[in-house]
Image (cartoon, rainbow, N blue to C red; front, side):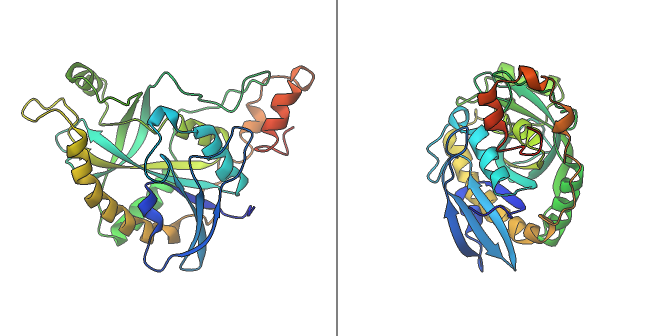
Length: 287
């Protein structure tokens, strides 16, 4: 399997069908945490190779809590990925963030409770910092690519991640607004946490499809409403990706490299050998 793919896109399966994109390979690797969501597409666009991973599987058959997040991030790490741009549909919690608007969040509030959130445990403990869950450097490059694509972003926003698969109640939606949250989705976690542990720079691009259900003047959010806006957002996302590929995978943000080396707390003599063998796939120089 290749190990020199430096950038990846996570999101909808349509994002890799860019005009002029050459599909080089489809890989479906085994990782110590199982198989990824689906085959990872290795494409070549304007001379650059990039990986595309459909988070919910091709055809969207995985619920947010069913996504094998550990295997997804591990598989990308095994390919050599240093930067991830992740796309996600979101509900808006703010009047100024209209359906079809794009958002680059800088903070996350975690409301999930069923998901494996770390590569560690089982006899090897590590504590990584997560104060800034997204890469500011990568966000700046996404903004630059957006300008070339004629796209403006809402920036500096807070994303709340709920468990799902049901949408919020009105009371929950208003609670999240009172907390200062701006948009809501079901998939940024544990994806962002695992990317952090894997020392991969990560930024989510949020695409607004609806006003959630806090807006009393609107009907409560429905799947039909979201699907009606998905195709429009998808077309815009493809334009952004076409411009973005030039800006990513160039070694611009390597600030996380070797940070986990100093986050591992368990001394060598106390580490579970089975867990060490799994972690060697991600960190061959640390164990």
